[in-house]
Image (cartoon, rainbow, N blue to C red; front, side):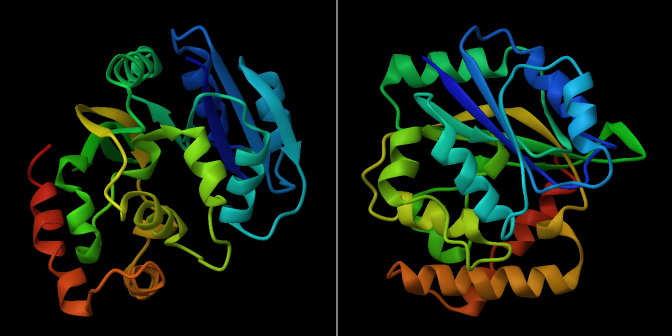
Length: 249
């Protein structure tokens, strides 16, 4: 089973090297790594080229935001399974892709997801929060739940058939895609109860209260566009569980 990993980056020279190494160290033999760079000016492309890597396609050009860049990766992918690894994230261990590919093939899955552990740049070995994707089910989309996106693996055909990400979203395009893909309740999926990705805290979806406001507005918009009835109180109801995550690592 061929797995396409898409990494989208912009001015990520300080972190992209460890992401490249993380993919390079994966034991799965059939990996296609596609890197979509937004015309970085800080030497990101040079770091990618000089770091041990398994890059099949490296595209560096201006884009219209993160979801436009992700769509470029989808368009160039050829794997059976597609996933996204951010330019400041790493896989939890070298066997992640091997385990994911085995589970998806053995059980005929359309999607598989696991957990993400957050760390801070100053202390990458210390986990500050664990995003437990087991909280997700299609019935909880209306409450704003989704699997941790870097630990979500789906059949590439699903992205192609649904037309990829909607680029008018700034921060919740991945949530909207999950609502579109899982909302009908027809996908065969499984939760893998382990940390698959280590993710650096401080990205756009975790960076302060303004981002939270934008995120929740876009989550409501995504539900409305996909015929999922919700309201602000329902969406806010997930935050007590997320707070508890701070103490359950």
